[in-house]
Amino acid sequence: MLAFTLSVHAGRAIPALDSSPLIIRALTRRRPVIPEALDLDLMDGRRVRVNIRKAQRARRYTLRLLASSDEAVLTLPESGRWAEALAFLERHRGWLSDRLERRPERVPFTHGSIIPLRGLPHLICHRPDLRGTVWISAIGDIPQLCVAGASEHVSRRVCDFLKREARRDLEPAVGLHATRLGVKSTAIRLKDTKSRWGSCTSNGVISFSWRIVMAPPFVLDYLVAHEVSHLREMNHSIHFWRTVKETCPDMALGRAWLKANGSTLHAYGA
Image (tube, rainbow, N blue to C red; front, side):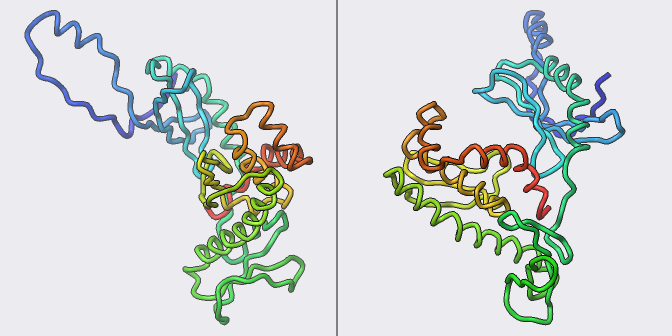
């Protein structure tokens, strides 16, 4: 049996009932109201919040675990039925439990935490006795990210530092690949997206997840080549992938790393 608790209901006005038998029968045949979310009890005793949405472009039911939290999203086609959605959720309870079990441990941006920067581990070291923001020190067995100021500002300062470092790497990389392909980007934006690492608009605005700076440099290079290639091919056709390979011959390495390890980057800073 599927065990769940409805938590947030989609609002719908209830009309006044007419005494006509036809209207009463029509009302009783209405589809059940689909909630915005529910709390699902898993087989191991845990409970997970499942957010529910309909998507016009969806062709099937899908379930995914959010990268930034322990919540999931159940997507229904526009014509999807609630009973079918619940049955789909029941069939995938084991999958959801397994994915949560294998999820990497969260690593906050606090003193003593070890986080990657350009693929190398760095130790966060709070230095309240010093002035400044964040800097890298080579003292010790591994590089240190030294953070000055009050302890309540450590997490924000580390996050801001990573964003600055990401822009330092991304801007020249975008310029390099754009020159190779004979295209031009109009703007570079940093985001903390959960389901994609980058995007490109038809007017030349390229967005990246700042977390990519934690990955090895060849991964960032592939991601930039991928998004810049969209300035020539706004699709994922065979011509697009040829364009990516043209400017990034080792694209397969970066693509494979991102597919295998990209989700782990969302565990940092939680």
